[in-house]
Length: 241
Image (cartoon, rainbow, N blue to C red; front, side):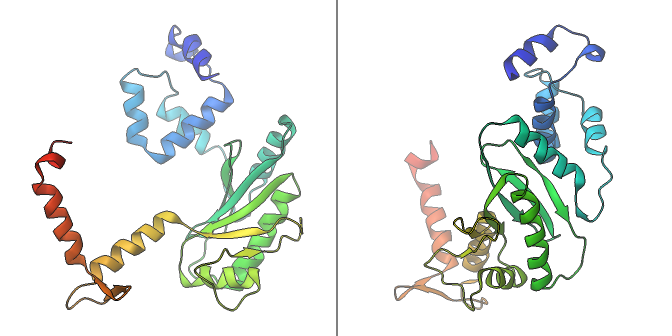
């Protein structure tokens, strides 16, 4: 589809170009991730893509309201009706309490619901999660996981929906799925936030720092990272790669 779209639009005037809905969705997602990268692709003529003004019109077409987004529900139903296989996906929750639903194959990738609040108790977040889960499962989109950062509210939320008092670090954590009792929902920490936490902890692990990390009886200090960096920087072999 992408190849045929490029061939069809390459020889047309800018005002006469028409784009497939799937290409529009891809362009919106690319622009949302990096407007500069999107504009670079357009200006370099590597690809024939919609203008940024067209992307903005599509993005602003819907006036979002707090709660479950009815347009998102309609899109899930449309995708489900157009596919012969099951939609398998997961929900992610960010610090602004936006529930974003994604499928593993990319058929669906959109904000399902949002709740603009300064402070949200874990039990309230759990109730909104069950609502979002029902809307997805009731329309044939199977939710297999929830992804969130490791803040205290989210950790408490994980405990509530899983029915546990503590989170074991060396075992998977899952919650029962009331819509499909034989298919649990796994609770996952956001990898990018975990990497930031590791970085911050390493930086703080030093004399006069706020942490002092230790593994298997050996100190793990920020100075070790600096020493490793200096060794690699001074290496003749590594400096040429």
